[in-house]
Image (cartoon, rainbow, N blue to C red):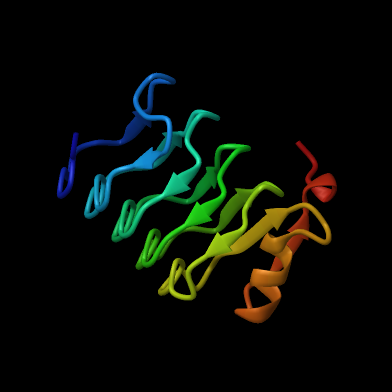
Length: 132
């Protein structure tokens, strides 16, 4: 299943039964109108270039069970301002957010996501500081 280059897709709801491990390599790369994504909790990995060049994406809540965000997964998502990464994350590739200059990572204090943000000069905010 791939929607790579789909310029008119704005909202994406990934069904719970789509995959147990991850979303395919480059599946939504270049979906330039994609603004909203619902990633179910059974997804544990964001593969290489899955959402690269999704230039309309502003915020994203990842699955609570995400363990891995691979190479270039969100590369050049230039409007991406907010991503929530929960504490099961164990690996985030060095260039997973390359070109995401407006990004702030929200997560659990002391988590790998906080460590990653600090090492890559990405602002980090604790989840409990979010006011809804």
